[in-house]
Length: 86
Ligand SMILES: [Zn+2]
Image (cartoon, rainbow, N blue to C red; front, side, top):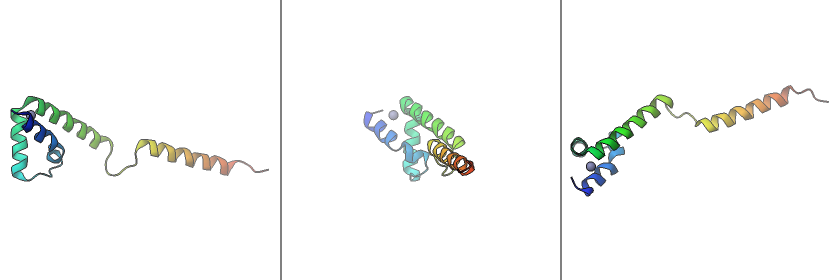
């Protein structure tokens, strides 16, 4: 196993996980991952993170920070609206 092969495998890992590679390229990456423990580790970690992300955030939901901001702004608006004037 050469560093060059590892670099190529890791470089294409995201495409591989997204199924964006041609069959021949995907086979080459898969073969490398099978034979190369450090790359297989990297692949396992990446796949694990992706499955976690998929479970938590489906579709194009806004990030939590944005959602909190929007909630704060709407709450403030409601409070202002319900404050008696004068
Ligand atoms: Zn490797």
